[in-house]
Image (tube, rainbow, N blue to C red; front, side, top):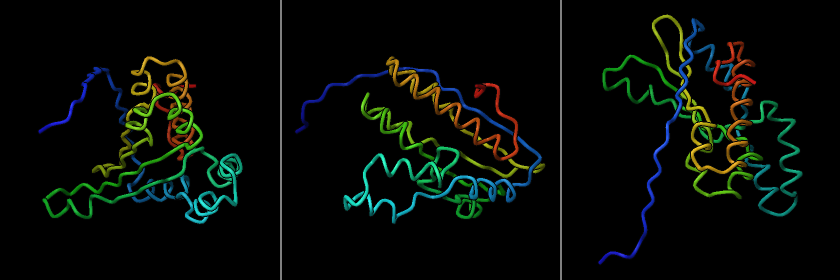
Length: 175
């Protein structure tokens, strides 16, 4: 027996960005790991216990996460997938700007399908590549102005992060 449910399908165009660079994979990985700090479990415990407020928590992130992003997750899939015969090294990242994510959640919980931002770093024979979906292309699909604005803000911050890695800002992430 199945339970009643309604279905809504939304088609939208996503914009995937591929940024290839002669920068060696391990060098770019190191820059990313240094440039986007992991979310601190101690800070979360302070928030969960009520010893700090959401506003103070976010204010603290401005010091530890100058890009606006914190790293929620990092996985080196290449270490597993090399057994499949692939010679590509790859590291996946989930990056969140928690202030923007919270604002988006208040508009539509479905926005969390696209937040945090996923970033993929891959080795190439002549360097490395960064792949990501442009946040505004997904968030704009909701047809809500505040989500479109959140997507544009994430585009800008993602472009800033890429520049902080000493790479050129992709055209689609221009200010």
